[in-house]
Length: 347
Ligand code: FNR
Ligand code: 8K6
Image 1 (cartoon, helix red, strand yellow):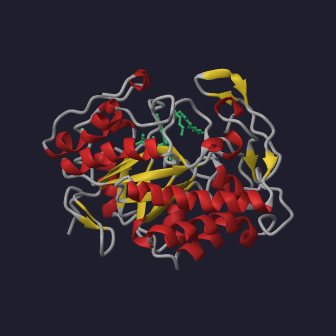
Image 2: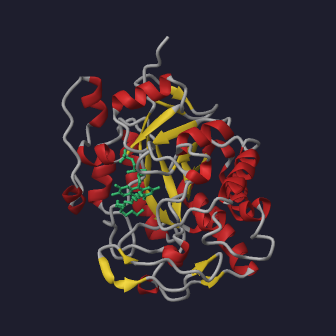
């Protein structure tokens, strides 16, 4: 029997999705200067409510989490009220939406906030802020144990704020070279305390955040995105696999809503993962619901899900180009092709 991606899928006892096609988290840098979602963002998300689940653009948990202009937040009451308009509009159109919780770690820039750039270790990343190329990245401060406790608490608080704002759950952004991912890779983590050097220690921060968020809002509302292969703001290290092997074993006991790969092209193979792709590696090591992503179209996603490579598909760029992506797929209509120029406005 072949799986119909357009039929409902139960994430768990409390959340049922109307289909298996998720809208991937997509940073658009369109929040106002207080990092509050605008009416244009309300309309943009509402137009995409036919997705099985919308994952919001990455949303910062506190001021020093910011590394790009006008990325929305979830730490002021104004931001919570702004998101409430988004979630109400999505729900009114029959959809569901999770908030992606974000701290960029060493990819933050003090141009956006008062204070220091925090990361696992004082190892900078090459380059500069996209769209603001004059802002080159700085060498971060290695987070103290107090800093780490504060960060964990702020992820949990942002998760509570997300639920207050009407989100159906949260996806913790543990992927793409940002803070949580920095703890998980040797290229960014050279700590010699209980957060570094061994797989157990390097997984400690990620698991602390996951457990704090679960304690705050429940495992049924908590999801996680991971990039076991280093490909963005991160260098590959052959020792990383043991860290993710350990982390995934721990996550198997957590009952998350889902686990989501973080990758742009899931045909990419990683030497550090014994030449596996992101979804192959996650499927081999994680037993819960897995979301695949990365340069899939509807037909390749259908084949992958029917081949049991993963359970749900997230679609990114095609959802930018086609607000009515689900309707077009359901009715065999031609899709508009994505182009980077489309990032200039919210359609
Ligand atoms: C992204 N991606 C991304 N990922 C994430 O975890 N949080 C984010 O905020 C963003 N922002 C973002 C913005 C833009 C403009 C693009 C193109 C991508 C990655 C995204 O979720 C997805 O993994 C990739 O786009 C691959 O999927 P597609 O586009 O091939 O379907
Ligand atoms: C989360 C912030 C996103 C900001 C916009 C991202 C725009 C997409 C371009 C990034 C592409 C990175 C992919 C790197 C693939 C490397 C393969 C070796």
